[in-house]
Image 1 (tube, one colour):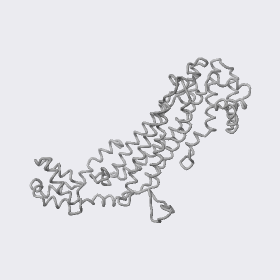
Image 2 (tube, one colour; image 1 turned 90 degrees about the vertical axis):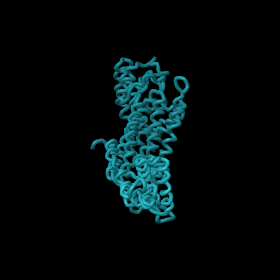
Image 3 (cartoon, one colour; image 1 turned 45 degrees about the vertical axis):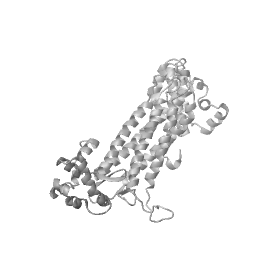
Image 4 (cartoon, helix red, strand yellow; image 1 turned 135 degrees about the vertical axis):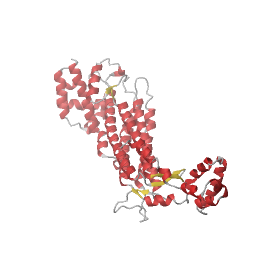
Length: 435
C-alpha cells in the first residue's frame, strides 16, 4: 500500500493490528463453540475471551517470535498465550493455520467489498446527477475518434451509469463468492474438530461454511473476486479516457475542475492538464495487474501449499486499497466536471452538416434510389465539405441526382438535430427507471 493512493478506512482493514484482532476473534469464537460441544472447559473459553479482548497485540513482539519460529500463526498464538495464560492451551484445538489465515483473509475481503460497493454507489450518484443535468445537451458522437452522429452528453453519462450498475452487481456477487469460512483442520477432514465449530465461527464472522476446504479455501473464489476488481478498473479507465479526450485543447467539451491555486505545469503557467483522469488510468492498470496472480493461485498442490500466500499478502491490500482510492477520485472528477455546451455545439457544426449523411442516404433509398447510388451521391458531396470546400446542404441542393429524388424542403428537414435525440427519454428510462 502506498500512502499517496490510500484512504484510511480501507487501509485499516489490512493493518497488522487489525489482522491479529481478527485472528483472535476467529480463535475465540472457535473456543466458544468447542466449549459448548464439551471439547474444552467453558471456563477456559471465558478466560480466552476476557483476556484476549483486553489484549493489545504487539506487532513487534509477534515479529520477534516469528524470527525464531519462522511461522506467523505460531508466533501469534505464542503471543496470545502471554496474555491469556494457562488457558491458552485450549486455543486452536483441532485447527490448522489455514483455518485462521483463510477465514481472516475472507473477512478482510468482505469488509473491503463493502467499502468498494459504497464507492461505486458514490460514482453512480454522481453519474446520475450529471446525466440528468445534461440529458439534452447535444454533442457529437465519435467513432474511431472521428465525428459520427449527434448524441447528448447525458447519454454518454447514462452509458457509464449502466456500466457501473453492472459493476456494483458484480461486486456484490464477488463479495458473496469470497464470503466463506474454513475451520476444518488438517487436510480439511474435520478429524480433530467438529464441523459445528466451523458453522459457529462462520455465523459469528458473517460468513458461510466452505463446503469442502481441503485445508485451504479454494482459490477460484479469490480469482473471481480479483477479476471483478479488474473489470471495474477497466470501466473506470474507459470513462477516464473519455474525459481525457474531451479535455484536449482541440476539443475542450469538458474538463476536470481546476481549483484556485492549482498549477498545471512547472514550466508552462497556462497548462490545465487532466491529471486526475490520467492518474485513474494508471491506477486501473495496477488493479488489472493483480488479476493474473490471483488466477494462478487457483492451482495448488494436492490439499494445499502456500504458493498463494505471498501473492495474497500483496494483492489483497494493494488491489482493494488502490481501487478504493481510484473510485473515489473518479467520483470527485464526475461531481466537479466542468462541461462546455457551447464548445459541443461548435464542434458539432465543424463539419458543415456532414453528421446528417446517413439520414440523406436512407431518405434516398426510400425514394427508390439503390443503396449503392445513394451512397455514392452522398459521399461525392460530403468529401468537398470534409476538405473545407462548401456546405453540405448547399452542395446537396445543387446536385442534380439528389435533387431529382429530394426537394429542397425535404433535404432541409433531414438536417434537424432533434431527429437524433428523440429517443433519449427511452434510453434514460432503461437506465434510470421510470423516475
